[in-house]
Image 1 (spheres, rainbow, N blue to C red):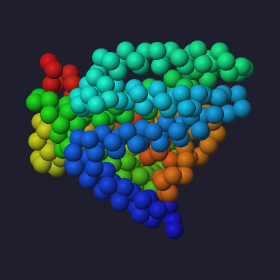
Image 2: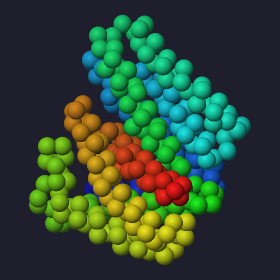
Image 3: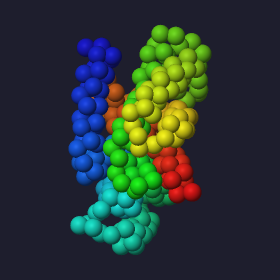
Image 4: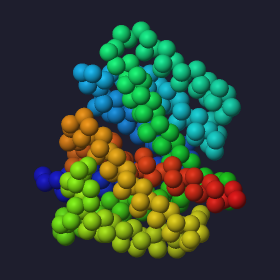
Length: 277
């Protein structure tokens, strides 16, 4: 089975499952992102471990899970775990325990270990938490699954447009030092398809105005491209081709959600500022 067939066989059912969980209710949606966070953290710490760098994998996963829950609790009722203030107070000693734990590991590069451990929490867990909150970024403060539906379809349109335009027309390299396969033609294809999809999203997803959907599209186009490049930079820095093999044709979790990790915080902050002020 070629790469395109594998991407289709895995991607289409995966996308359908995500859409169903998003629309079912706010808790199935939050659980989906919770699961993605755990798998992505595990993959990140496993891949970033080298002979010289040894991040605190299990402590990083635990702290990442906790930070995700704290961020989500700002909008989603998680009182059966803790309230937001209690969660924030508990997270502080958890975070600084990472520094204390490193004292007893007798590593040659303790601050590199600490830095990579903290990086996973910020890059993955915090990003996924803010991605989850996009569903509540509306004037009424209620959960709107159409917000997430629109965000993901625009993000996927960018990936699909860039993939096919790059394969068919790609000649001029976008950032060859970091990602030799990405081209300006592919980027243009992603831009065109994203705006086409955004047009229909604005018509049928009333949670945001047309202006907001167009602004979100621009943010996604810029930041998801940067997210692709950041993940490529990470893989090149540790000399690997794919972040994992969990998703045939797509690579690992970091390969599949690299655009989200950088774009979601920007989209969330934009929507919060627009609806707050």
